[in-house]
Image 1 (cartoon, rainbow, N blue to C red):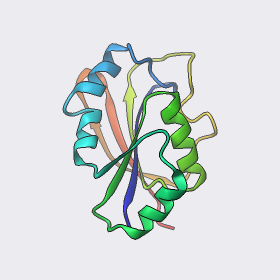
Image 2: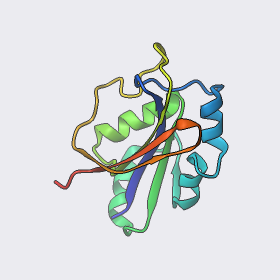
Image 3: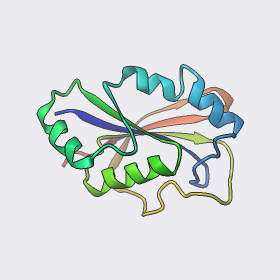
Image 4: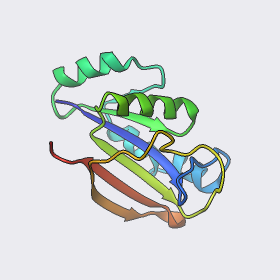
Length: 138
């Protein structure tokens, strides 16, 4: 069975960073940032990808197949919400920027998902922390 991976960034207080934020720009372009995950993924999920197709595809592909969804704007947030609704996300890669936004779009606006285990945590350049969470075994 394939893996569905979400890649996102948030501030310490849980908001989606602005696209013009210097740390966010670095994260989107650096080889150790978001680009790394797209390079090792098999398929990139766009915001308009039909989730029901993904449910079928995930079950019919082998475990080496990785579907990657980037959440960096409102369209990505909508895709993530749909993927959580269908309970098909296997891995969350959350880059935490060492900043407090105070306002904006809350990354988990529909509630914080439960059932995740921290698999790995890495400190990147600019103080960004990359946490990788995997779904608890059912």
